[in-house]
Image (cartoon, rainbow, N blue to C red; front, side):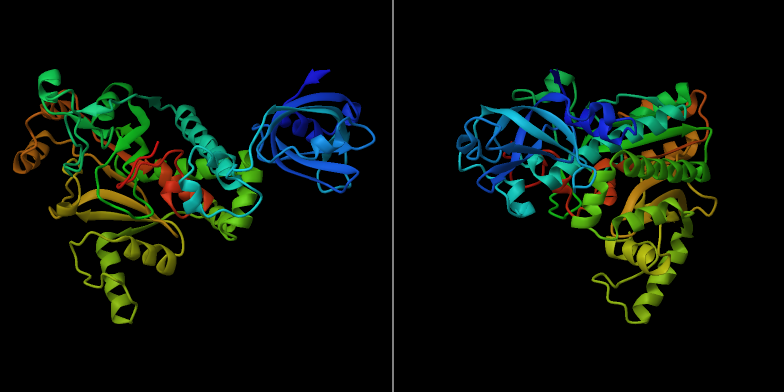
Length: 459
């Protein structure tokens, strides 16, 4: 008798040459999702963690011992099963297991919080150690795994090298100042020789490797100490940050579009059951929207033109919470969503932002007022990706940094322009926000295994 995993049995079913496996004896280990019976036949929905789909275990009173005892096995209980693998092409499920023997491995008391009923996402956030077993979060984490694999696959297959950038750093990248300071005993400065914080971005560090390996990317955790309670902000999240040498803003946008389309297509192909679940239970337009993205050419819109469109919207009576539209403002999510959902009706790059609202490292355009930056806006989310061509001209970058007062400590960053610098560009994708977009889920707290947000930290 062979020990099988659920994914192996489903693979057998989808193999057209599966008739030879019908009625073979199998051994399984997993958990009960539900258990019901009609007095003579019992049905267990069973999952061993290797597939999103459950397996139906059938136990017949005439063929198993202790039928009454088996009928009392509880939701959440861990069990082992010996039975026959039976193909059922005319039933709802493609196969079932006709049980010969079922044993309890780990009991589950009546206070098990995941009974067979709908639970609110708020309730499930409070039991983050249990919620991976709930259908929605089972699907979320399977897609999270596939999406991470898609990111690595795209960049590795396209000649990018993965660089591990530091988590403890002495700079705050864009100068936002919203960092978590690291303490060691009473004085971190004595330990490291200077104040340090948790990284808000791996970009500055990964740029150093672009000057040696050409195309690189970092994919890891970042931290922001923002007192924000919105559905799209978290204190700890993962970022994908590629850097491309000998590239301008147009090259940057081409890689953004190609990588996103690859990742969406990868998830749809590798997680069909999970994506159908999200399309049915979370957002009934999800697959239509994602396929529209796959088949669309991403539009490009100058920031100045975007402001004119928003001014016209206000004049025409559209109600924004922030209706004080003017050139030089930083677009809010409601403005971004209006542009992508009502004007473009698809993905769009907003390009050439005012220099005063963007980071110091972005390349100054010839007009002296704007920088070669882009934000990719998508329906329902707003900004999904931010990128720019980097300022490769030593004198211009140094002047900007001196004016901001952040040159000290970042002399090494200026050195990248002094010693064999070249035009280069890069971007950042918030991995958890991308996961929100791909699944149709509405809150970043439901994207992360153990979300870190202001106010509490239970785990």
